[in-house]
Image (cartoon, rainbow, N blue to C red; front, top):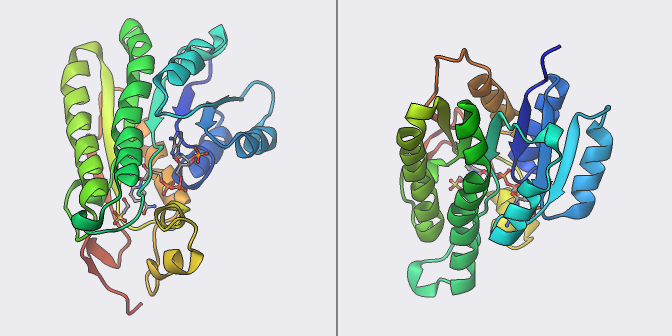
Length: 253
Ligand code: NDP
Ligand code: 8X3
């Protein structure tokens, strides 16, 4: 019997990552779930585990030594990762540049850009050696346009956009697919994190709009990951029907 494929997800403890873990497990894949919140990871692993279908790794993508240790610790049966979903990320606050907080800026750049690079660097040599694999980066409409006060978050997602194109070119001779999925407004814990736990402010972001959900993005990851070997989605921008771009949202619905 052929081995079931393996997906590694960064940031599987909520939002897009958690929904994608549920979807791929339901489809019979083996899934490596990762994130910093140990209790959530353990709870998700316990819920989804059915034999050897789930492996949990607790690490911070900003800590390169921890990334290398975690990937290096994978048991032999979990090493041949077929799909890497670089999803872990965040926005921290929404301030004009003159009021920006350096810790917030570092947190976003270290997670969204350097963290993505560090995990990719740890996983991709195995894909190159096997001459197969697929990297799916979660970008954003914020990586396509810049909106007021979005400055550093938008810059980090523009970097994801550029890195996706760069990975695609570098990995072309090795038969590895590279895809960016760039969502607009999605109601996850994203705004709660951005506004440091202010649930009212987070709720206002989605007022009057049927926002995307984690399941919507999980569907797209599933679609991109299961196309025939000769077909690669390079870039997929997805927004709620009520959102045309970062700045244009119809809230009358
Ligand atoms: P959530 O806040 O619900 O999920 C974020 C996930 O990232 C969590 O599982 C969190 O896990 C993980 N994470 C954050 N920082 C780190 C870190 N340093 N190390 C490891 N894991 C980390 O938000 P979303 O699901 O919405 O966000 C997922 C991705 O989608 C992000 O890259 C975000 O920028 C992007 N995105 C979100 C949109 C939205 O509107 N929601 C739209 C477009 C893109 P833990 O805290 O346990 O480490
Ligand atoms: C998240 C979407 O519009 O808040 O990447 O930047 S937005």
